[in-house]
Amino acid sequence: MSCTTRLLYYRPEAPKRLTPAALAAFAREFAASTVSKPEYGIGFQVGFGKAIDQDDRPTSWDEPGSWVVQEFEYDAEEDEFSDLARMADALDGLPDRPIYRATLLLGNLVRPMYESLWREPSAENETQLGFNYGWSLEAGPIECFDPALGPFPVGWLALNLDGQGDPYPWTYRELIARAEGTPGYAAALDVCRRSWPVDGPRKPGRKVVDQRRLMKDLWPYDDVHRPSDWSWGLQVHC
Image 1 (cartoon, one colour):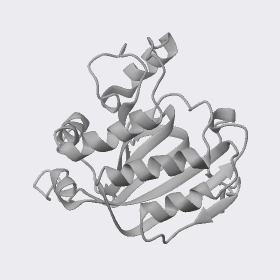
Image 2: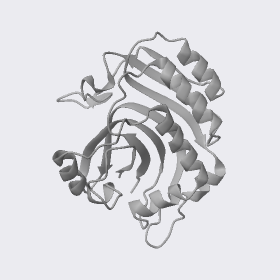
Image 3: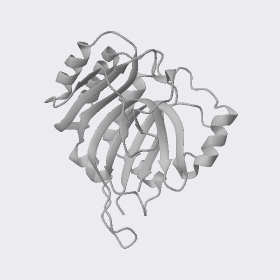
């Protein structure tokens, strides 16, 4: 069975106003963290609107009664940048307007960090796990997903790391612990927190706590009452 895994670090609330200049500043800080290598896959998609959380519509959806997949039309798209600095310069050239949806493709994972999350095939799982699809930043509705549990809406902004395979026999917490134990990941996550800090992380409401209980392993923390802040998450599709 072919699976893909996305390890994500998400912000539960949308920033008050996200602009191309803010994305450009993030891209430069992310480049300085040296967790990405610009082999290929550096680019952006930006769509303007009132705010990221003005609605929860996805950027792609199935046309009812057909096999046709419709996709959101972005206002600005560009790819094949040679490095993050050039992409940041291009983002700075976009209008100073609120962003509705955006994706930044941030390059590949550097080798030592890739190896820290590499899982070889085994008797328990003959398919390897390797995060070879690289880094991205996504602005829009963010979900955690597991085939047995379904989707859970969790936030509005996320740093993603994508790859082939699934974690098993590692648990989700074991995968995240491996990431947290590698210095480069801490640097990448710090860029997220500095770029869009959560103002006074507060106690979650009952609805959020109830969802965290339903998420089971997709909520990788012991405390379901953990203050709302940047958090780890996962998507596993098989």
